[in-house]
Amino acid sequence: MILRGGIVVDGADTGERRADVAVAGQRVTAVGAVDPEPGDLVVDCTDRLVLPGLIDAHSHADAAVFDPAVADALLRQGVTTVIAGQDGVSFAPGDGRYATAYFGALNGAHPTYRGSTVADLLDGWSGGSPVNVGYLVPHGTVRQLVMGDADRPPTPPELAEMARHVAHGLAEGALGLSTGLDYAPGCFADTAELVELARPVARAGALYVTHMRGGYEANLASGIDEVCEIARAADVPVHVSHLHGPVHLISSRVDAALDDGIDLTFDAYPYRRGCSLLAMPMLPPDLLRLGARRAAEQLRDPAVRCRVTREWLPLMALRPDLGPAWAQNITLAGIGTAEFAWAEGLTLAQAAARVDSDPGDFGLTLIAASDLAVSAVLKVPHQRPVAEFGEIFAHRAHLGSSDGIYLGGHPHPRGWGTFARYLGRHVRERRDMTWSQAAAHLAGRTAARHGLGDRGRIVVGAAADLVVVDPATVVDRADYDHPRRTAVGIDDVLVNGTPVLRGGLSTGERPGEGLRRNAPAAPGSWPA
Image (cartoon, rainbow, N blue to C red; front, side, top):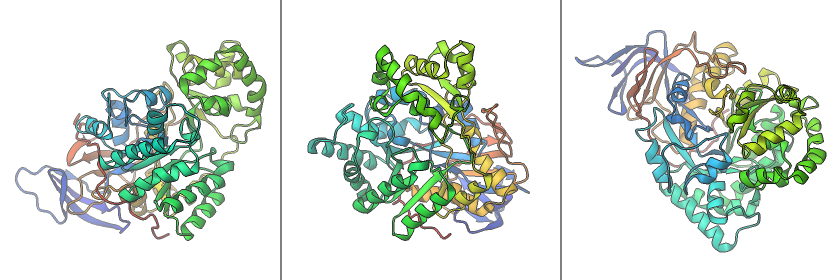
């Protein structure tokens, strides 16, 4: 197959050049002037760009990649690989029941995985998904497997067993270790535990990836301080998930860490609103620490419900990320019980009014009835200017991500639009990055950082994950009212050398693989 006459934009930020790209099997075989031979399939790429397949550095598509509509949405943004196992919660190792219950509104249930190893999970993606999936060993899943819901430090034998699970997952091809330090049981881990579990990551040349402790924004500085402490003590490269907060604070704290010799990167997405479990803002820490089913059981106790209503909910109006009109700033995205599915797409205030209820009381009812499986889109009252996104995206330590969640009747549009938004709005319209820089931030650097040495480049021998982009039209169409609109401007995509989008139409092929780490995590100190 030959992609002919396009402008090749490699993932190493080396600029643009007109060239043909030849593919045979799963690999790029030539980049330059290529003469077609009889029988070659030729794709005319005139006036279009040829980029390496884009890599989503933080995705919750662990199970959703098997859904043809989700895979189509990814491919139409140019995404050929997602990094799963995020926030310390996913299916392996173990039987997956913990992740299915706790992250039911974020990751959902895996259609085929029944345990028990990282290798089993990776094998299930190979040949079953149109896109590639890389995987991080999830700390919370490992801790739950070894210690259950215990809210205490591990004993030495327990810590050793957790370290063995981490090392085994890495040996089976995982890209690193992820932590979710605002979720149970990850929140029970102290820094010393995380350092010890990061040591096998360092020995493997892999990456420590973290949803930091403390909710970002106002606590961003303390969160990064802990990340740096782990990096120093374990001598491990570190990566901060979905970093958000004041741009001056992000830049100053990240730059200070880099200047101090910390090997640190981060990912971010181009939207002002976030999305998470409704329980995260609405339940006090003591209930969140119980996990999904136990917290829901407690919330069904009238005395506990009364305490939360009296002592915790009044604090919602004081939160700077929600404000006095907090119930109007929360849109219900997905609800894990059919009884309340009618409320998806409504704000919490609107849904409560439909049943003549107080918004706080109605929110607690949803959480209890769904065993915490309620997701919500969260609108920040004082939204930062779009120009600040450009500063973050151009940062030398930045990688692109969506934090995409694909469940529910009214999800966040980031899962359907992030990467087309990067290309259309932040490259073409705002010129926050060049096309060459975008190929590096959204593909080449992400691959290198996660130890995927043959991805993210357009060079001979590289895996043939390739995306043909119309630079004049590529853009996202999903918004908060219509979150599942697919992007436009990308009509031809190859995954492992197989066309999955051809002339704007899905081919129905499923050539994706569960990707194994095949190189050390590249240092994150790229030139500014």
